[in-house]
Amino acid sequence: MNPEWDGLLLDCRLATMTRSDTPYGLIEHAALGWRDGAITYAGAQAALPDAPERLAEHVARADGALVTPGLIDCHTHLVFGGDRANEFEQRLNGASYEEIARAGGGIASSVRATREADEGTLLAQSLPRARALLADGVTTIEIKSGYGLDRDSELRMLRVARRIGETLGIGIRTTLLSAHALPPEYAGRADEYIDYVCEHVVPIAAQSGLADAVDAFCERIAFTPAQTRRVFEAARAHGLRVKLHADQLSDLHGAALAAAFDALSADHLEWTGDDGVQAMARAGTVAVLLPGAYYALRETKLPPIDALRAAGVPLAVATDLNPGTSPLLSLRLAMGMACTLFRLTPEEALRGSTVNAARALGLDDRGTLAVGRRADFVVWDAERPADLCYWIGGTLARRIFVGGRSM
Image (cartoon, rainbow, N blue to C red; front, side, top):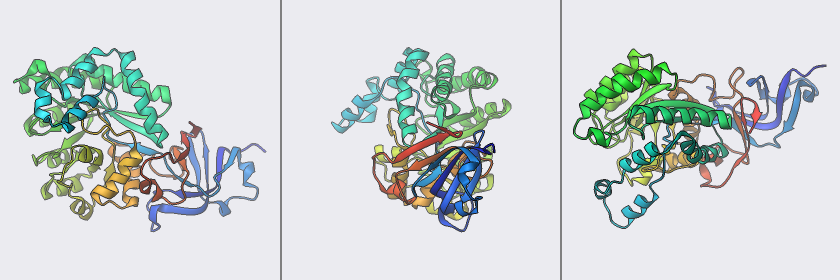
């Protein structure tokens, strides 16, 4: 008798994260089977035929351990040159962000280091960060550009992001974020830079297949709503979905603008008003919460969590991994921060890093343990789903599978 499946995991506790009256979609005394990279069974072990070991070529027992979908980090700036640890120390010694920026620091230093790095150097610097996320249970990562700010450097960042996926065998979604900041050569000419992005960067990123989506930073220190709208119109003209860094430092109605373009997500949202929340709810736009940046910047204005909940806006959680404001290498730690700082429940945090994170990337083939979904899952050294948020730091991922392959 030939085995029906490639793999079968027995004696596990499945947090399926499917729609269910059961918290976490939890199934006790469960089994998980897969074939050709897709899940073939996720349910009670007792419902399997006698001698279930015969069903699969490779069979393992989890000894009652928790199994969840692979985590999805739906907002990172993982590819960049250099770091800004020295600025972290300078700020703690009393220097202001403005003083650091005037001295050539801030995002300008990341742009300079990224532009100077060739593709191989960028890959070598970025792979350890991706490996850290993978070791923490992350099987899909969104990676933004935005530290090149010229066409060639932006495209190089996106190519490196794709190569990370090929090298590690994990899922990668790429987002063009050329409208992240004003490059030094365009000082005082923001509208001209937006012209450049719309006419010379977005079209090539789309035509080359290097970008899955387009993002922008709509804020007083970055780009106006009118400039952001132009970027989104260019993205739409070239068939790309949009995302937005919205309302992080002030309410410029960025969330509502994103929703008007049926954005996949609006991210940060600390200052989003009720009009933005309602617009997101109508559009089905996901709210991506970034507690790492909130923590690193010592912010005090909380995102409107209760309003988002009441409106039925899906909540996602991500690291916002970047060199300046969220040098965070653990999505599980971001989940714990979301619980402690933003008062999410552990179930909301886990949904935010699985099924809702997948939705924030426009992916419907992962994020839950269900028949037909990608066999991306993690076996944890944990019994309860809440343990993933409860433990601060440490290594809990016992085995990680991507497309049914043990990593």
